[in-house]
Image (tube, rainbow, N blue to C red; front, side, top):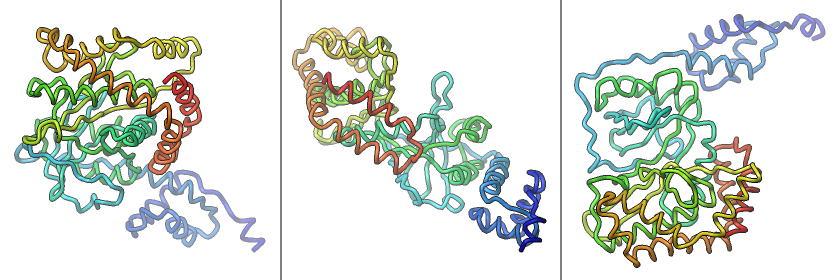
Length: 380
């Protein structure tokens, strides 16, 4: 034993990689079990000191360097938005090596964004793949908080490294709706950051020219959007409406699902693409809290004007903005949720943190977030 300890050597990275590759070449099924790979290497190299953590990193590098062949499909895929239905994004639901893909539609994003990829799974519905961002845990947290209040928000989960690789390799030969699209999935940018799966939301964006609403449906939309806005104020989520802050707002982050029958009873308003943005600068935070305290009818009319212009265009928006019932619906939506959060906000936040940790353990800034949210809640 003493002789063996004295003779133990630590292999360099190149030597260890050669050993890992040799092991995987003879036993590819061990790729998911770095412990067994390390044991196999020890058997073949008795005097080596093999660290399973180093082996795991080398396996990840080997897998990441595999470039899936981009096979040009014979014909383009036709994505039917009217018939598309969401598929489950539950962990372990699919074996991506076996799951067949019918096709992909790339919805372009804004400047600096890779957009999202709508993937139609055979015998299932549609899932949404998008690039993972550094603060994805904040997105998951925001979604959990919205759902705790009964506000519709699509489920989202971070894809583990190997699942992401298996999924994107499967997508490589899949047909697309437009030639030359979806190559971003296999580019270095997305392959380095990884991806998240998001639940597909059928419906139309708030600003879609195809959206037609009755008066009752219009007021229900305003009430539900008001409920979202209250949570956005708590989270300092600025990328939806300009309420109590400067900015243009983004009506595309509000989706409307309007079934053919049932009117406003079956109409759903869905919040997409939300996050929490804690304010650390004292002056900026004080100004923000002051804006919350001093909110008035003028702020609600400005918000109503933004939403009406998104729905019916700037020319027709004036008559809608003067509708007292419309203003009341919007105001009620905001104030109802603010009142609820003033009572139960802290417990909902704690529950959302726990749920976020279940799907994304690295939620390192949760204390900073909770401190900020607790401060905002004092002004609800």
